[in-house]
Length: 344
Image (cartoon, rainbow, N blue to C red; front, side, top):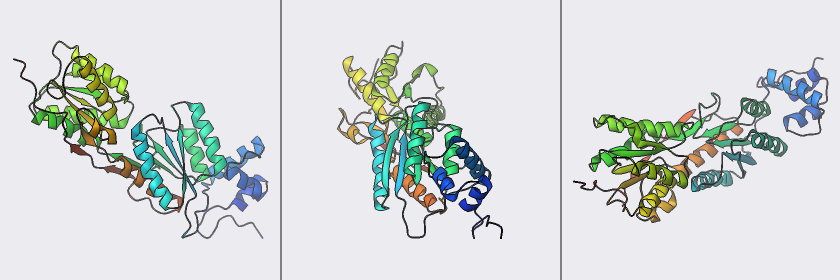
């Protein structure tokens, strides 16, 4: 009797993969689960068959829960990451799943080491935050049947991976419109890294608000930053050194806004009396800054929660819902913004 090639739902079975590869079922199982005790030539032959047949690990039985989620950042040096972790961990804990947090630091060696570790621990799903995996690593996840959800994608996301983001364009628009409503007409922007979609969207929202007010964007007022306080400090000094400095600054993240406030303080300038400052994120500490920061609230914990729920649904072989989700942003007005000073 010929070996059974597919299960009742039409998926190719490990038994059939083993028969075609000329190896035992335990050997195929070791490859699927990332074990290292398989000869390289055998592993390559089995992985090629898994890829060609679109093999996916069998989903957990109804009522069972995923055991482990991987949460991967580019870096972990920001309170912003803590908010995402909080949301993911809350949902994972409620589902009886553990969470492994990693940082890749834009180094391919780190990514490959992470993938080796993921294969060894047989993770049930991956939440990837503002990072991008090499295509070969993304393909390895697919072969292993490990579902992937991307939060705040760095670039164009993989077509088969759901994404969770925030309304960054609307947030940039709202921040700039708030300053315009106070009477500011010369508004600086400390932009985020241009490789990130969220940075480009906030910049586009800023420009759209200016154009909507009949103000031609002045590119000398747009200074790049890298989401760190130091870059906000440096960028604000660049704006202050212009022949005609802005009366307000929109920083594309709270940490850069705090750096800008420190640059103003060191020059003996007051916020908001001499210059207004708006941030983006609404990190917990900015309500205690001096002065408390006007900012755009990004629902970071909610983004983490939704990402975790989505990857858990995928791990159970359920539909993830909408493949692209943008959660709303809100303007939070505090004490760092006011009408522009009278300079005449």
